[in-house]
Length: 277
Image (cartoon, rainbow, N blue to C red; front, side, top):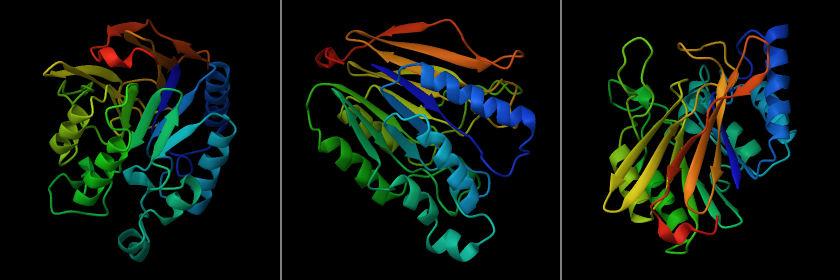
């Protein structure tokens, strides 16, 4: 099974020049040609959460025509409208992407669960690093618990990282994780989830976490389309889920305008019961 992970599309507020429009189309064409079974979108579809931005992102994603799990990012919260930001922060997002009811996707023998790490505000100096509300932790657990101990591949998707993966090109320090990320990791450990996908950092990376015979791959997804790059080209990941391994491939935007595949990174899976992906 082949899955693609994209993040930080930022439709709307950035300059929509010919270069950006061509990049949009090149990415779309590349994803369509990959014969994907699932597309994971790790948040920040918009720049300022305007209705027109959500519509543009929704139309673009629908044209890929593949089962898609879409997660909100902090840029998908209203920016100027404080009544909406604090009263109904994800109402526009939810209407188009069935949130939170659509935060779970099953395909063949695989389960993909989304969790919201975005908050309107909370009393923390780095509140934009994200936070999993206690109610959201209960929702995440319930989604995995519904599958129980059934065999098969399991993945989790959030906008903010739960595993410090991507290293800053300027400082070399790993990304900061969302508040209560440790609680999320406990849930992922309990249900033997093998992949945790995140965006937000606009940087790529893979990091392995192991505990008691459990192996989790933290996957940081670069910005797919935004001009706001952080020392790295636009790109996305594909993950080939095989009976005994996961194969990660980064695709990066090149000077020629195409998205080119980088060398494959193949890692063994430790969950023996997941042999039928």
